[in-house]
Length: 60
Image (cartoon, rainbow, N blue to C red; front, side, top):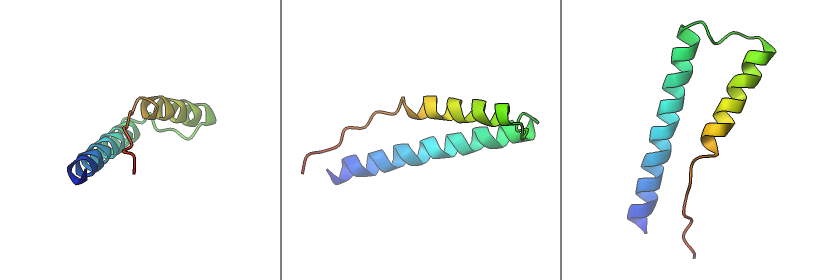
């Protein structure tokens, strides 16, 4: 079980790093404008990506 938790944590960390790298790339490309429609669009894409993560929670 500890190995599963460790693998899960590594997966979460990798996903967070990918999201942060993508966010930085978008900001560097100038697509990180402060318009409300742009923020809303980014927020929606982020929520869509996060909904695809599946986790098996062990029973205790």
